[in-house]
Length: 326
Ligand SMILES: [Zn+2]
Image 1: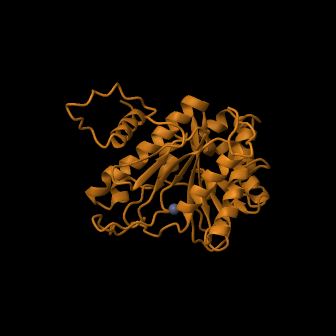
Image 2: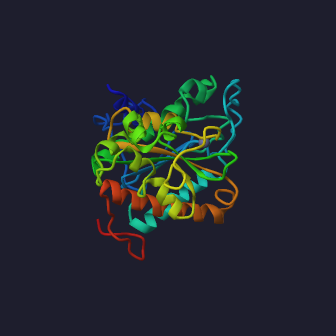
Image 3: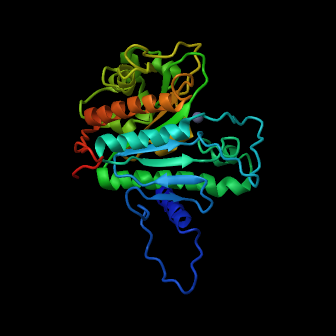
């Protein structure tokens, strides 16, 4: 069983509340890697700590560090090297992005949310670091990644390809959006020609897009050209790196270039779903409901345009009731 199917099987087990089936119940049919349920259904692990909302758009939202729940039965992660700073406001941000995307397109993004405080579980790390050695959270880490695999499998089945946005918040000195494609600060500091020649984008979270995009764009254009995600976010009021106006971080700048989720659920290891980590500063962006609503609107406007320009995906126009003809 390959990794995706193995994770999807775990997701099904999670949805079913475990593998045990009472003898008076019918034996389940052969599990589907797409999971069960219809668009808009919300599934979770049995405890309700990890949440997956089924979508029908070629978009997956992931929010691993925005949770705030601190149940006493889960020990704190105390590993020496582990980061525990929560991404304040990002769970609410993800829900606002999902709601606004639906209102504008009539299609729902898939959405996977960790409701636990990062100090309890960090799904954007390998299982050892994610749990800090706490066995009780291993099934929750598995559930998070199984739900992402299920979301990606549904995107592939229904839309052939798509985009995963891993939503985060940073506390770096420069107030700008940092886009993590798994392309390092050093590679971004190269000239356009050297960046393209480096092959960095072929190892990135948008490997699939780089090999097949509607505008036949090369690496530099995809990462920081006038139709890049950073350009679109900038046009919508949020200066971003990389983008045409900020092509690379300076060598001394702090910069997140993408983490475990982008690496394991984007197209760098194959597969039809690209992934980008999107890191926002706090003040004026994710610190109040009004600011999160405004930032969510910018993300949604940018992503709708990005999906149209590069993936050729154009949703039916939403009606006043927020639904659309399919
Ligand atoms: Zn984060």
